[in-house]
Length: 374
Image 1 (cartoon, one colour):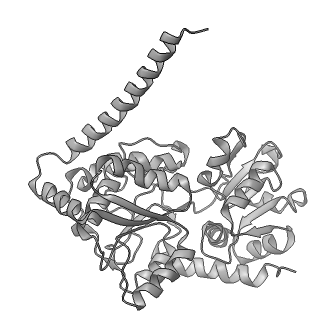
Image 2: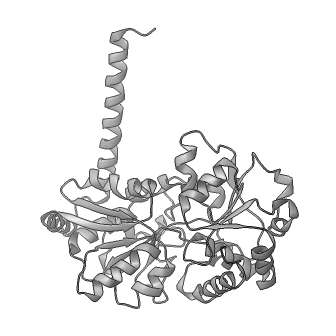
Image 3: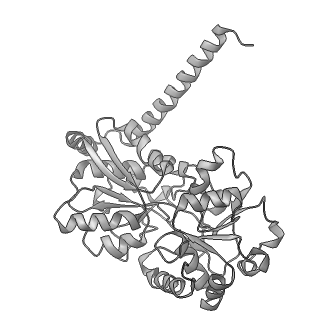
């Protein structure tokens, strides 16, 4: 049994290590922004504003990744964060704007409702002028260069910083044999009827991403058969679908994501869940919740710019990878190295504005063929 002295020393060491880790992060961040009077002036102006209002992805995983590091780097700027799906937040933002109320500085999150609703409403400023740090502007630090993933047609408002070749879902292999599920066509096997939960593809979200990918790769007939023949359960409650996959209630989760099951795997549950990576003629690449835009009429414009530069820096993108999603930055960890895009491969960017037509078509097919709830 360790002595009281050794236990106390161990606690001191742990505190010291934690302090050093924060200190190293702060030094690294300071080095990225060093000796730049314009940046210093921007930070000073942001500190006078005192706060920044940020929208981001739902759940604590996103909240921690998008707030904790910034709060440490800029303790003089309070970060007000709301994590929610765009399908829930954007109608509220639109009502506020119609009333002349502008509550938001920075929008991070999914793309479709952003480019379909907020961009046409004039809710964004051009992003490029807000990017000032050399660490951010250096194309060599980014897969495809900094400009390698604009989500809007104009390539100026919504920038994607995530880099994941997204699987169509997750599988709890404790309940299935991998040999039985190797292709998308295998989902049609009778043994999988009643074993699939799907993030509702009739609504914006990850579920319609999957429907879009099936439509582009295999056509409407395949998608219609899947909807009508396999006794699939549909839900737009992401935590519920994740829990069902973890428990094996529905061991195949189409549109279920790693970040959705992370709260369970952190508790030691669902340790044999893996990506459903089936071969596709045209693989999909999506930015997920990993996009950023600068809001028009931002109430704290300087703090907004400081936040966006931090987010796209090495420090901010290192924090982003704690969501379990890859970053396009080449100098940060890759939590899903097997799902990082490969140079020379042509991917379909599911959520880019130029591909919205096929996404809408997939949603219409889902509405047509999914049996109505009793």
